[in-house]
Each structure stands twice: as C-alpha cells, then as structure tokens.
Amino acid sequence: MKAFVDRGACIGCQLCATICPNVFEMDGEQISVVIADPVPSDFEECAEESRDSCPTEAISIKE
Image 1: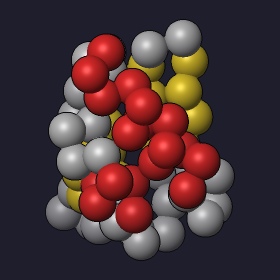
Image 2 (image 1 turned 60 degrees about the vertical axis):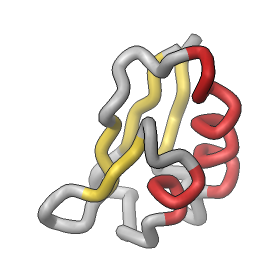
Image 3 (image 1 turned 180 degrees about the vertical axis):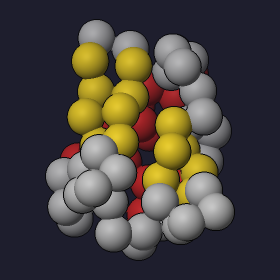
C-alpha cells in the first residue's frame, strides 16, 4: 500500500501524524508528508484511519 498527501489540500492539523506517526510527519512548512513508502503492513490500519480522519480529505491510499 502507498499513501499520498495532497499538499494543496493539507491544512496542517497534524491529525495524521498523531494517529500514525510511523507513516506521516509534518515538514518544515507544517504540511504532512509520507515517511514510509510503501506503508509497512503493521501500519496499514493506522494509515487508513489517518485518511478517514483527515478533515480536508488530503490523504489517499492506493493498494
């Protein structure tokens, strides 16, 4: 699985990095970036939860 962040849609709320810090972190501009590519199987569930919780739907996941 691969996770993607739409930088234009991200508002920097940090929810994804809080939910799944092994996959997402905030960069110097306080925009989310994916730090695990591909997403390790142990973190797929929290990556999906991050996607589902994102208030701007900036996160997408492809199998």
